[in-house]
Image (cartoon, rainbow, N blue to C red; front, side):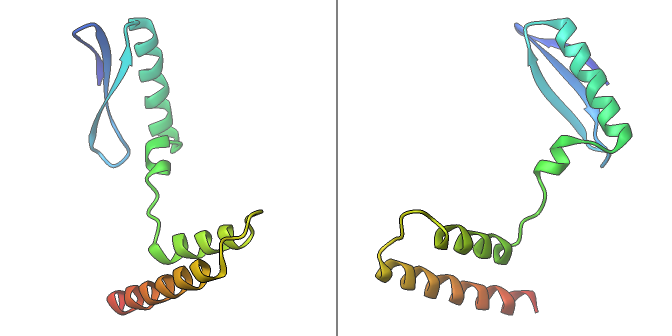
Amino acid sequence: MGVVRRGSKWVIRYYGPDGRQRWETIGPNKKEAETVLAQRIYEVRSGKFPILQRRKRLLFRDFAEEWQESTSSACVSPPPSSTSASSGIISSLLSASDLLLH
């Protein structure tokens, strides 16, 4: 773990909770890089690692259901023909994804 200069930028290197080495480019300020490194080390040790939270696995079914809910509650409704067409496509994709999972 440490702070390294690459060209005009400072880069931090640390290990995530999964044991993988990670590099982050911080910027031209070494003090800021040291501060961010200390923050990342604290986050890894305390279990509040932001990168792992952002990369949460999202299943197609969950995404499709969320998308259908958001489009059905939109202020401006799409034309009925496009709504039924997209619903049919999503339904067929969901059934196909169910077949692949089982």
